[in-house]
Structure formats: C-alpha cells, structure tokens
Image: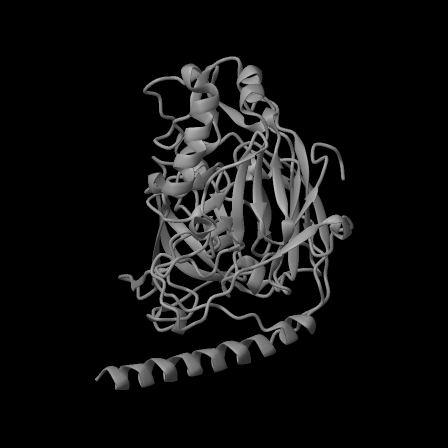
Length: 449
C-alpha cells in the first residue's frame, strides 16, 4: 500500500511539473527593469507583534528545493534600485493587477508565500486602505481545488490547503507569534507599466488576517516571489535606527546587480540531502554556517554545533529580513546572557520581559550600558564577521526602556538561530539565488548609496 501511494504521488508530481513547465513556455518573457518604492509605516499593535516575531514558516516536508540555473540563465536579469525607510520592518509597495493597485507587503526572506490583503468591502467594517479589489483587475484568477498546487505533498510548498465551499483552493498560514492569515490561492500579475509586468504569479489573497500589510515571500522556495519572478539576486542596506523610531531613515534596495557587490564577503548556503529527514529544519530558508559569538572582544564558550542543524534540524542559523530581533537557541542564548549579566547585571531591569521575548532590559542610560557591554561580533564561515557596534546593542522598546536585541528562540516556539533586521543595520546583505550564497558588506546605509 505504501509503495503504490509513492508511485501515485510521484506520477502526480510528474504531471504537475509537466503542466507547470508547459504553461510557462507559453508566456513570452520580455526583458524589463522594475521600479517600486520601499517604505516604512507605523505598524498596528498586531503588526508590531508580528514584526517582532515574524520568522520562517517551519516546513513539515523535508525535501529540499534545487535551483535550475540553466533555466535562470536564459531569462533576462532584473535590475532595479530604490530607496526605503526603515522602522521595524521593510515595507514594499507593489503595483499588483491590471490596472495596478498598490499593495503594501513586508519584505520577508524567511517565508515563501506572498500574499496580499483582499478583504471584502463590508459597509459596517471597511477594509484596510490598501486592500486589493479583485473585481477591478482583468488579470486576476482564483485557483480551483482541482489545481495540482492544492493537492498534498507538492515539493517545497507545505502550506496547508483545503477545498472551500466554493470549490476554491483555501490556505491557512500561521506565524510564530500565533497570528493567522488565510484566504484563497490566486494568480495575479505585478504590473509595473503598460509594457512591463511579470507573468501571473501564485499569491495568497487574504480575506482574514490581523495585519494591515501583506507579505512578500523571498525565500528559496519555488513559489516565492524571488523564484517565480526569476530574481537571480537581491540586496538591501538597512540604515541605522533612530531613537524611539520616530525618525525613519532611508536605505537602499536592489533587485539584480548591486554596484557595491565587489566589496562583499560571501558565505555559501548550507545544503541538505533530500533523503535527510530533519523535522525541525526549514529547507527553504537562507541557512548559513555560523561558528561563534564575541562580546567586548571576548569569544564566548559556545560550541559551534549549536549554530548548525543537528540530526533533527535544530540549530539552523537563518538570515531573515522579516524578523526584527535576533533569536538564539537555548545553549547559545544562556552564554550570551551570562556574559551580559557579568558585565552589567546590577543594572538589569528585574522581572521585565518585552513582548515575551527580550529579558535583558534597562531603564535609561543606553549609551552607558552599551559602553559597558562593548561591541558584539557574529562569526561565520570563511572568516566573515558581522560587527554589532556597542551603540546598536540596545533598542528602545518603550518609554525609556532599552533592551538588548536578542531573545530566546524557544519564545518563538522554534529551534533555530535567526539573525533579524535589527542586527543587519549599516550592512549590505545580498541574497544570491543563482550561486546559492549570502554576501555581507560594510555600508553607510543612512546615506544615499
């Protein structure tokens, strides 16, 4: 019985891939460059929570995606530059549909599904101001339940789907903080101008969610925006955050080639055999080899094994633009906290935990606390370091309270190390899809670069 099930699933996948590839061949890919603004907005209370906890959707399917570089090399590269403003998340505004409707989406390298707000217009409860109206777009279509993507065990796309009462493909997406987005899977174009648009991309059309923005999924999954739009590389430079977030400095974003990339240092992405079953691993995340942490010039006594996936996948280290702070697995976190307590323990705010995650917090005097702690260095393979200056060790979370921007991974309910955007400030980060690597470079990100 098990053998026949595998044969059936394999046959289904072969048919789906054949149909998918055939459909793609009917689309004429024309060279185009893209230009859309990245902005930062004041997020709602629920959005703040999601910005704090947003992380990779941990896949229950352990099969790894492989890139078809020959196919990608035949498709014209996208080249685009824009500026954005940074607060707690990077918010991209995309012109979706025909004619285009501007949609705000969190740029998230830690998830696959891209989704937009499609709230119905109910007189007593108006939708968000950026809600997408499908009836106004001539290129909008909804995936039926019979679509292969709505079937179980599709590789690289482990999102739970069901068939709704209208026989349409329905999805439910839970984030690590417990927030939910659900709706229908659809196809829609991103229309940049009359002559420039993407082919129809598979997106989520959320009818129920707790946030004002959607998500632009940019991980390695075949149905992420980056993969569907054939983005070979993208990069951004997150500017220094100012005070209590009232001032929102501008940074720079590239799709395609970055003229600064000759200064970057690269780390190869870790890859995992398809046959290797690792229930706690997200095989579609940008996973890198982290080797250690230094605080104030002192290398902490942390075994390198806690930064790499073990037999069950725990310990994976992810570079994630969609998570605000950095989260470490228990063994690494305890060593970091032990050193910070040694340096500034008497000044810790007793009994205070911000957002259920940050518990190394202080009342006022952040400059003094930062000076006592010193710089922090995240160490990676190939001798690549991310230097966190002492001025960026703490973040003001509310009313003069400042916390070290590091939390326990278990507060997210996951067993991974996540390097969030707070520790990507003043740093170029490049995601090279084609060569399966991540690059880092020093940058004055608050300046126009």
